[in-house]
Image (cartoon, rainbow, N blue to C red; front, side, top):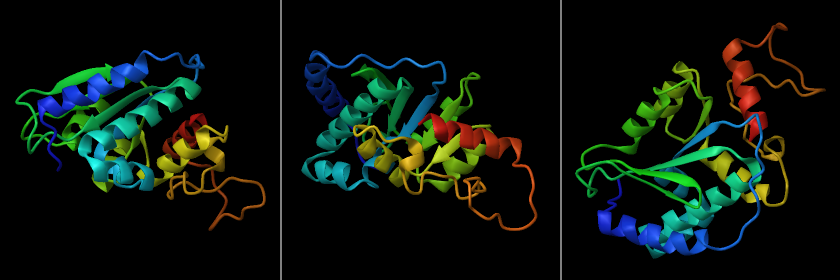
Length: 208
């Protein structure tokens, strides 16, 4: 996908360091937190706001996304990792850093962000949710016991989080494969209990 040379990565981090030094709101720590893994460029290109920033430069797009994720993290307390592609013009080695409390990973030269995200999903027992519109990653996440939310839906959640809205207020946040249990909604087919996987997905969406 898009090149992310090491020099540009350093520029992004140095600019974010300024915002990191500014006073901010205290993180709302919750027991029911999870690890949110973000497919960086996928989310940027599904968002009108972030895409507009990226039109100026890749760095501007990354900065806009990371600042937004940092604000959401302060409100909700989740651990957030954003993964960017470096496979066409990145460093020979995978690069990692932290800015504004958000963990940042750039895949190494020759490796796509998809592979990094799959590795992260395969590590540990931490409850996780993936932000992506890539169906392959979403299916992989489900097989690993995780959950995926479409980038456009998470973008809407980010936009509304400042106003205090919850995930339940965001149109399209639900997994289309999960039955709607809201009062007054008719189920299709015979009444039945949701599968363990679908119940877990609904529980994660409610934490957003």
